[in-house]
Length: 372
Image (cartoon, rainbow, N blue to C red; front, side, top):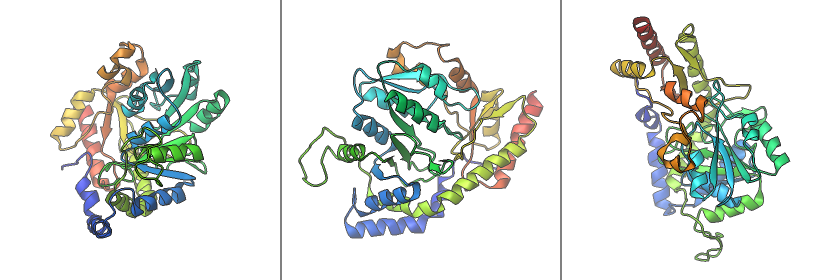
C-alpha cells in the first residue's frame, strides 16, 4: 500500500468543480487581487471566529511580519519566540531588525510555556509570539494576562489552528493579533499561499491594511502613507477558500478521529514512541509528530513499505545557520534539541482512510518487533 504524506490530488480532486467555477467567476469579473472575493473571505473569517477585523494577505509569514511592523517592532527590540518551531516565527522578527529571543520548550507538549517565556522577559522585550504547534495549543489566556501586566504586544501564531478553541474563545483571538494560514496543506487550504491577520484593535487593523498594499489607504491610489509591502491575496484563492470554510469543522473533527485511531493502534509502544501532549484546549491536529526510537531507521523502513513521513523539525531554530549571528551553541536548548533528534511526523489529513492509518501502524509495530 502507498500512503503519501499528504494527498493533494485527493483533496483538490473532490473540489475540482468548485475550483473551475472560482476561476471562471473571477476571470469574468476581471477583479483578480484584493477585490470582492478577498473582502468576502475577510468577512467570512470574522463571522466564523468573532474577530472584529480580518486582513487577508499573501501568506501567513507576511501576516506575522506586518502585524509586528504595525505594532512598531523594529531595531533594538527583543521578541520572545520558541526554540522549536517553523522558521517564520523567528525570521519575521529578524527581518524587522529586532532580536529573536529563543526559549526552550516543554518536552511533552513541544510548546514554550508561560513560565519559560516570563523568565526571558527583559526591559527590551516589546513582543511575544505565542506559537501553537502540531496538535497542541499554547496557553494563550495565561500569556495574554502576562502581556497585559507587562504592556507587551502579543502575537498569536495560530496559522494551523483555525477552528481550535479555548472554551468559547477561538484560537487566534487571545492576543493583540492572530494569524491563520491557507497554505494548501493547512486545515483550510487554498490553491496557493495566503493568510489573514485577525484583531480587535482598530488602529492595528488599519495599519495592516495599509502595509499590505504599499502603504496606501485604499482611498487615494498612489499616495503612500507608510513604507509598506506587496502582500496581497488574489481573488481566485480567496473564492476557493471561502467555499471550503463550511466543511472546516467537520474536517477538523475528522483529523481528531484519525489522531485518536493512531493512538489506539499504537497503544502499548510506550517504550518506543510517544505522542505530543495536548492539554485542555480544543486542538486541530494539523500534524502528527511523535517522538520515536530509532527515528532514521524507522523513517527509511516506512518509506520502503510505501509510507511517506517527514521530520518536523530537524534542527532547533537557534542552531540554524541563519541565526548563527546570535551565538547559540549545542546544549543551549536541550529539550528542543532532543525533540529535533527524535521527531517523526506521520500522515494525517481528513481524506486519509482508516485502512491507511491501520496499515501505517502495522508497519511501525513490525519495525519495532524486528529491531528491538
